[in-house]
Length: 83
Image 1: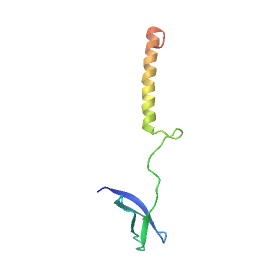
Image 2: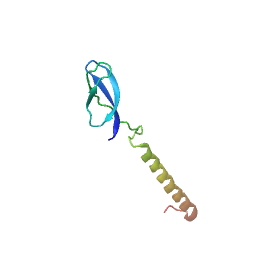
Image 3: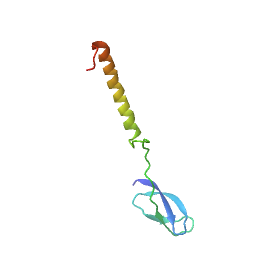
Image 4: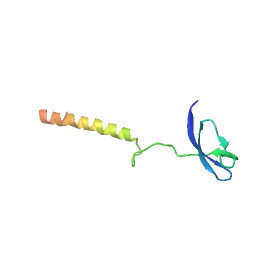
């Protein structure tokens, strides 16, 4: 059974976190004992600023581009043209 951290809030407004199985939707509030429902939370991922691409994808693209440009520079020096 995999446990995950979720945020909960009871009707009295108390908020807390709990490490529980993903299927659990409600727990008892540790402050007042009322039923606390699971809150929606933003996903935890880091996107690159403008394009929204994942940082690793951007780094891989830059690496491939630099490799390609190095080959083109070498061909230019060797043959006087791009191939």
